[in-house]
Length: 408
Image (cartoon, one colour):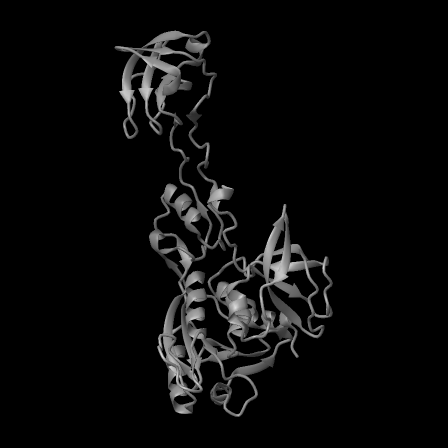
């Protein structure tokens, strides 16, 4: 069997990068920057108030109460027209530019306004409630590096510096194909004998969408070689990658394997991992094809370990693999020492330490245990049985909410 690390490396060495495009920022969520983004100006671009209140000279309010003359009112979006001199103050809103001469802001709660006057009740040292120009980002600073996968907060930072069309790796189009005569659409209300609802296509479409890909759903193909050839050819022509589920094992009716063998350039691996051992990979007319097993948990684990990193690499990401944490297993876990085994577990946190317990049955068809899981416990080759209390590695494929209303 091929070690998982070797299989991952071969896949990553083979798949190509996607083209670089200038993309609208509002449509770039999940995409990866192809170059550094550098601020062309300070953020904030001018000294401004952090509070609704009064801009003053700190020297004028060293002794309070102090009554000052209000020279003007500056709401956010307006520009001061008068400088602050001794004994003066400007009524100012949050975000409004600080008038010349002012070096502090007294919040409105600490004042008593009057007709053309304001009494300051609390002193304000120099810099109080003042946001300095460049206090967040200085002109010329790199605000996001090439290889960064853009999340919502990255988009906010790029918007603040005017990066309206950043250079990113193009969003991938990924074709998804489910196979097997027994598989019917998941919307099927009544199953006939021998039928199962297709979950793999929906799960793959969901994890691909979460990744930032555009999904080309090519549906379910029965055990018909001609139909399968046609669908795979379409996927290779219209998509940047093709992902299939089912039909890559050793059975007589595993037609995906037979058809892919005809196409050439496809290798069939027995990867030393559990679940997800049978795996097909190669290029079809220059398009990467990933052939996953048919059992639903095997599909998910093989996708996480082999397909997701490959797609992120194609997208230009510097980060390819899920984060892993050290934790403790609260029960004995029996694993195959000849494979890297991924055990579905729920987590209980004791301070900063996660404690793991299996989330249900570990057979590769038990999708319910995956739905209940918080992480995958990773048992490396050679580990075998793990005793309760052992330190283990936990791959965090999702971060569930852990607090209800009562635990706020």
